[in-house]
Image (cartoon, each protein chain N blue to C red):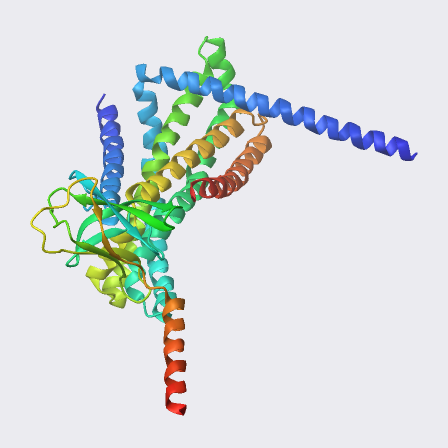
Length: 158
Length: 263
């Protein structure tokens, strides 16, 4: 009987270690602590080009994560991307807030930046953000730069 | 002469198919019997805890030490590559993702096959060679329910736990080398990791893998022991086959699971 109790103790310790490892993985390694346990409301935005934005990308305002990208769809009437933002219920934003797609660092992931406007009414579920700014596409930027350089050169020659 | 050769080749192919089908059927029937026996085990949990102690606790040392060293090496090698691109801060993410998604389950399964699988095969094979299984049947005790099922359930439980311990240990090892030794910023190490590792997509993925591997490795080990030739040579051959088969099976399943869960 004593033998059995000792054995049970060791097996229990083994299983407990496993549970601790899972807890460590979930809390310290994974992002369960930042997983939104708060309820959220969804707001619709339309972008001409979303670049490399992905579902679950963060939505930040003043650098603080205030929500996540819930869904990305394509609208074949306006040829725009429809991005649904899931904003944390704790935060309210004015109706005329604007959204733009930004990149963290030079090669980092893309996220949505929310700039609050001045309206007294707050965004509610189902609202859409009218003012949006698309992602910067490197090829387009280079194209614009070359174009303006070429125009400059032409001006100097005359 | 020529037609003779063709007929013989076709006959051999047919025999190979027949033998394969019989073996597959036998394996599946044994699996069903083991699962049925496993379902009845809640009445006698002591059988499982004894095996869990043997399979799980005794594998702890090798799993923990291997995990630690894999983490050490990953941090060194990862730092070497990442520092070329000036993104050494992503070291935590690299170590965590490769361990959680891939190395944790796979290396644990390979070690598990070597440490626990072989001993299961040898034990059951020797029981068979010593006619202990036959003696049990004489006493109207079903050896599949009494001997095979508890070992199977224990292996099934132990493998995910061991894989998680391996992963946690490896990340700890990566932290020790990356942050304490090389001097990557501690905050960036953890925050990059937390930002990049998803609870379901990455950690859940790894756990599903380790459960499948535990199932495959334990079943192969038990089945090889049960089907071993009851001679010393037969047991040794079965043990070898356990390691070879389950290692190949783990690698193959890993490819299939990764391809399935990639999207």
